Image (tube, rainbow, N blue to C red; front, side, top):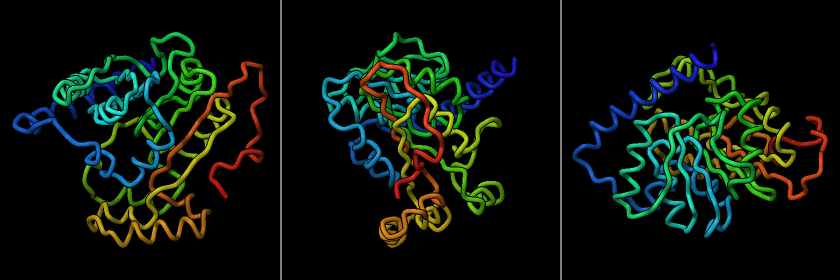
Length: 268
């Protein structure tokens, strides 16, 4: 019953968001360039690059939301399926795909019970979706539907910075609304994913640049982010967002989930 209530609350919250967006978008064109999506947050372009060449590949956009990522990936030649729990968001995504002239299959479904056959996708993309899910359940589903050798890339808010956690609770900033059950991704969530994906990598984004949420975008913040994270990779633990890359082994042999110490969460 707890799970059913969580799903109902999530669906209602995002349907309300989609309804508000529909009013705002009523007199605006849904046409957009790839760069408008790729540049709207600093982690998007490098995260999409981790998918590699998607031409002709079967790709799932998990938690597709407004559908911009799905459109960009379809323009790159992927055979995209967009899935979201919210019917309101799927309707917006469907219209955005039509306006931008790409063909995408859309589904309203639960990410913890994916309606696909085993090995159905060569790649999976998700932006701000994992932290809404029970990763012990969703991780197994993601591994099931991802083909051997396939790659899954997710962009997620990171929850291991205590100062940022305080700011999220206390400070006002744009687009702060969230559901009652969601929480930023943390080490516990990554451990749950690692149980399903032995090859798991995590890369931090926005250290100083997170201040742009309050100060407005400042190019010098991103400039120093790049340098600091190159010089001191350990600072990735303190970033606002992380890009998680999971790969399903080509071999179908049984494997033993690695211990935490064997697989560093962030690159050294």
